[in-house]
Image 1 (cartoon, rainbow, N blue to C red):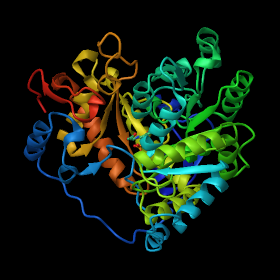
Image 2: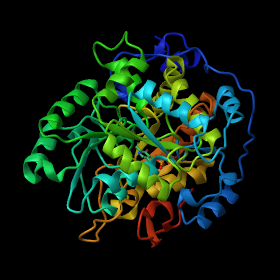
Image 3: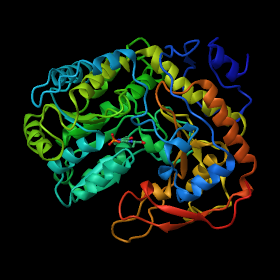
Length: 493
Ligand code: F0G
C-alpha cells in the first residue's frame, strides 16, 4: 500500500492511514473516496504573501498574542475560521447580479425560502445577518429566566445568548467528546442518560428546547449519528420538549453519516440531511459555513407561533422579515449555496482535505483530536505543551507561536474561549485545550496544507522553547475575541 499522502494526492484509491502509524484513529469507518483533484477549477485568484519573521514577531506582539487581533494582510495562510471565508462559485456570483434590492418582498427572499423548505424541510424561515442573529431571536423567544438548555457541547455565541436571556446551558454530550484520544465515529452524540437525568432533575417545563449541533464545532467538528438524532427525538417527544438544531455544518454531518453509519451508504447526502432535520422542530443556521456564503443566516421552524414571534422581533434587531439584515443578492447567493454544498464530490474533497492535513500531523506524532472532524484539525495543546499549565493559556500560546513560525493563523479553543463561570467568576476550565486549524471551503489547495503541516511539525520539535502567557487585558464577554497577552518568558523561536 502506498503512503496515505500519495494516495490522497493522486486520488488513487482512498485516504487511508498506514496501519503502523499512530494515525489509526484518524478516521473512523470505511476509507473516504476522494476525487483525484479539486472538483473545480480556479477562475479568479487573490494574491497572498508571506512577511518576514521579524515583521511577524512585531505583528503578533502588537496583536497582544491574540490571532483575532492580527491584520489579515499580515497573514500568509488564514485558517482562523471556516466562517464566511468560503470561495463562492461562479453560479453564486452570477446570483449576486440578480439581487432584487426591494425593501420588502424581494424575489431572492422567496428563492431562499424555497431552498430552506426543499433542502431542510422546515415550513417557515426568517433570514438573519448571520447565525448569532438567529440565536438571539430563538433565545429571546424561547428562554425564560431560570430555564436550562441542554446541548451537545457549548458553542460560544450560542451559550452567550442562552445566558443573556437567563438560561443555563447544560452539556449533555457523550464523555468521549471530551477525550481528545477517544476514537468514536460519532463523537458529537448526545448522552441520553445525561439528558434524561437533567429532565428528571429540573423538570421538562424548565427546558424550552434541546440545542442540537450538527457537527459539533468545539468537540473537533464531530458528527452526530442518525440513530442518536432519532433517539433524542423519541426521548424529548415523551416530555414535549422541542429540538432545535444548530445546523451550521449540517451537510458535513450528513456526509459523515453516509460514510460511517450502516444503512446510509447508498442514500444521497441530500436525502440524509432531510432525514436529520425531520427529527427537529427548527434550526438556527450560520450560512457562513455550509451555505457557502460570506455573510448570512436564518432561523427556520415548523411552529407557527414561533414564526410569528420571530417575525415580530426580527424587525427590531435585523430588518424586515423578508430580508433580515441581508441584501437581496446575499439571500440569492445563500439560496444557491444551500443546494451546491450537497454536491458529494465537493464534500468528499472538503472532508478529505481536512483529513489529509490531520494525517500528516498524526504521522509525525503531533497530538491532535481524533478522529479528524469535518472543518478543522484541532491540535491538543495540553499534550503539545505538557510544560505549560492550563492557567498559562497553552492553546493561546500555540496559536501565536504558529503564526510567528510561518504566518499561518489559527484560533485558540480552550480556557480563553471558555470564559468565566457566571457565579464564581473563576475561569471555566474545559477538558479540551485546543488550537483549531480551520479550513475555509474551496479556498486553499493541498499544497497549502503541506506548508501548514511542516510548520506545526517544526514547532512541535521545538516545543520546549515556548512559554505560557499572562493575560493583560480581559473584556467582560466573549473574551477570546479581544483579550491581550504577554509571554511569561522570552520565546526561543
Ligand atoms: N454555531 C456554531 C456551531 C458556530 O460554529 C458558529 C460560528 C455559530 C453558531 C454562530 O454563527 O458566526 O454566523 O454568527 N462559528 C464561527 C467559528 C465564528 O469560527 O467557528 P455566526
